[in-house]
Length: 284
Length: 284
Image (tube, rainbow over the protein chains, first blue to last red):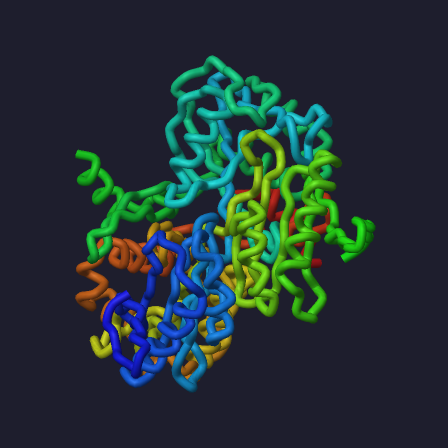
């Protein structure tokens, strides 16, 4: 907190905030010492009045979970929730009398499935201990969730290594599907990635995996859970088509934005000679 | 709340919860009447002890924002934040003495950009009032965020209609990019969608749009902001390649899962005769 104003016998401290690029302020309560909700309420009132006079728009308050005693005060002062992570809650208040332009919360979780074949036309598969296929004997492709800040291509490689011990290299995204209401109100994007194996010994490593093996792809595709599910059936057919050289998915290309950020572009690089040239330059 | 136990002169009410499919409980505080934090604390203690005896694993509490006075009590009882939306906070507590298998929070926001061409090789473009290109005179493709529960293909059509008044039909996802730390800790997936226009009169409708027009695609691609940004430059080249019939992106196909859920699969349907057959059956 910064600034003090003498109001008779009381001195009210203003909250200190960083300006954002949209005419707003971001306040982070960093002091680990517990704050009295009454004192916080006074500071918040004084600061809001100050920000209003300054013509500020969105005010963000990032409250670490150890300050959970201040949540109620912020809500009573007109703030609403924006998002939360295990260790903090982000609240926001839109000051102007206009519709807000506040960015939406994250809406999707991202999952990956890995299509990994050995030279004997065998598919790398796993049996899961828990979840939907528990106890069914179903062999499925390794799957998992993309971690915070992780690239899709890296997540597929990591999941295969964790669940089967096999080392791989990213080839292509073959297909993806979007589904809704998959977890509370949230949606889900699931990417099927083709990976090239660099090792072939399988070893069950992740705690959620019961078994892993290489399995003839036709046996995989013949399983009832694949055949009875239109989506899984299509994905198996796309994989088979890829195997026969008749399919092109999206490759990845590391690009740089004008702000110097590295970001992967996924696209069909077949016949894209102008881009392949750039890719070769990059590789050399 | 349900159940009462007589502890001397006090009667403690247990919290009522729905069981989930993973050995857990989901409690929603639905009663709009404010609850006293002391009473909530007693109920929560008694319920947690009960759930522990029952061998429950994850306990979820969904607290509508009008009950923000109970957040601190839940945190003091051992709960942490899981996620939040404007009107509620979801807290969670993992009871067993083992690493938790709780699902991760949503990690990505999804954006769309629309590539819409008329028969005169002109691209549909807009100028934005705010944000990064404010006052730069830059003409860009219509872009926007995918709403909660919205399909990528529908979001692209909606954004074009809102920003330009043009009616369109979804053709393909040409490419997408994944970037990180785009908003607080969250990541971002941005899909470039090709749409076929069904109308050609442009009309600026959205409050964030300054102007809209059809622009020769070569003039679009020649803008400094496109040429200086490797990513935008690649995307423009992919669009030009598509226009010349040399590129295939991912089409969408509505599929049904075994649980009867409708979900879009995005994939390259060129030469995928087995899937096209299914697609034709579906359309007829």
